[in-house]
Amino acid sequence: MKLILLLGVVSLLGDIIYEGGRSVTGPYLLFLGASAFTVAWVSGLGEFIGYAIRLVSGYFADRTREYWTFSLAGYLMI
Image 1: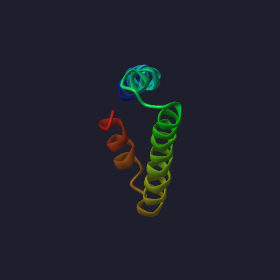
Image 2: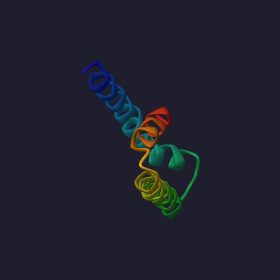
Image 3: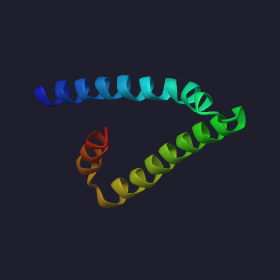
Image 4: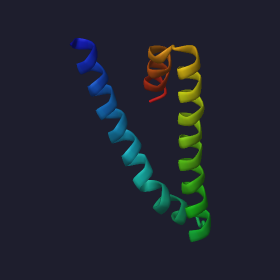
């Protein structure tokens, strides 16, 4: 039960950090002088990379049956 609560807290804090950082990316790039196209492109590229990592890691987790290893690696990336 302690492990589940710990993972929940880590996930919550990771979401707070991720969403907070993501919400200021656009205004920060605009402040630096980037165009709206550049802001959209950088944001889209970030989303694409995140989904690509999930796809590849999911495939390897399924093939190797090392689900906890990949789960813990994902939490350590936060």
